[in-house]
Amino acid sequence: MINTMDTTCLYCDEILFGRLGKKFCSPHCRSAYHYNENKHKKDKLYDLLIIISYKYAELFFISLRQKNQA
Ligand SMILES: [Zn+2]
Image (cartoon, rainbow, N blue to C red; front, side):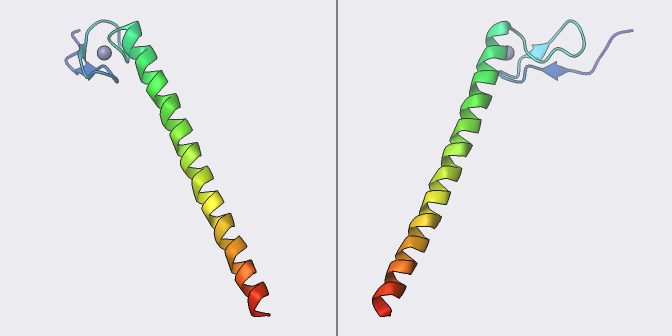
């Protein structure tokens, strides 16, 4: 039986031939894909840290203002 469903490389979208369940056309694409995934995760964590520090700065200035008013 011939599998007619095309699967493409998750990294470069090259059509994959060979065994089912293959996700990448080459070891290079596999490592490049995972490298980008990890980089993306780090970026998200960094964004979260920025948001948290802004929130803390906001709270800090609110409390300063309240002290000055009192
Ligand atoms: Zn590829």
